[in-house]
Image 1 (cartoon, rainbow, N blue to C red):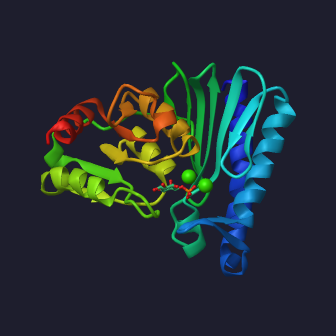
Image 2 (cartoon, protein in one colour):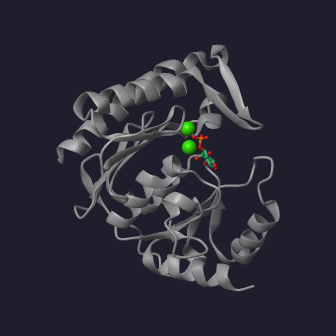
Length: 258
Ligand code: IPD
Ligand code: CA
Ligand code: CA
């Protein structure tokens, strides 16, 4: 395993242990509201501190972009961290959340870890080296038509989100696929595309830490992941379309049609 990936795995497992330990007492956690419907708990912060300590211990010069503490300048390497993706699920005891850590070098995604601490599922990828689930190679599904496809998405829920646009996308696929799931962790949604549990995924308005690791996982698993509207980098825009190559293409066509 690449040493930088190894460090990211160590960091993700440490954070995962903190998250799982806190779960039984989730009702007693201190929770703040960042904006309406957007929460952060002391567990998010503690997990993020642990991740940053672990990464900085090994690579003190690397830059950091972390959801709860923001950016720290550094050299050409940048860690992109979501200490707990699926905070709302976590706060409700709904068992779907993950730790997400990616490494970019000069803007290119190099390493990725998405860790589901409840199922002990560790998704990882190094650019050019494929994607793995608990050390075993994974690939995107072979589903070749929308009718057989299971899709993931994220519903709008924040003030100002474009509900009409999401409904427009949904209308274009609703009766044409096997189903659409809203599981509540974009990082895991993308990891599930990478290992073939989902055939495709779309969501808008995401942040770099929600998607950076998941995008590399999908691409390294043989899938396609891009901006939903343009050629821009989806890490920056947060508008993501992903899938196995065929489902990606079919969704892209459907979403382009007025
Ligand atoms: C959220 C999850 C969710 C997505 C939201 C994200 P958080 O991340 O990824 O699936 O729909 O847009 O903010 O806030 O739980 O880290
Ligand atoms: Ca997130
Ligand atoms: Ca988060």
